[in-house]
Image (cartoon, rainbow, N blue to C red):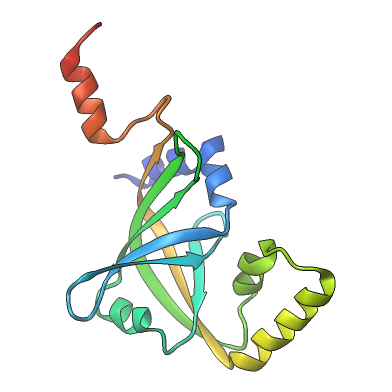
Length: 162
């Protein structure tokens, strides 16, 4: 997929709504070669998905070996709205807590007092974190009204007019 095609998909209003959510599912290949999918908080910076995790997380070792990833951001309603992404994970270990981690966690429902306590706990727990940065190289937006999964599109085309 060409970068202009990816940009065309990611700038659509529905894609922008999904990119404003706070949870994605990150798929990668573990060190033992088996697939993994983990939910993880994220932020969209306009060109990349940024996720943050502790440096000792198993996914970091796996991503160093094989940075190819897939991401799913979707809704819980029917029909679902789905943004599928693929890319390569770039890893960036930083001292302290990345701003993206605090931003991704900003949607959590907390009182101001709870938020203050939570932030203090986070800052005392993590001495450093790894930013997982994925710039999409492939994207598909599915809303089941104007776009469908490829297999369903093929079935609809094969059926012909009703």
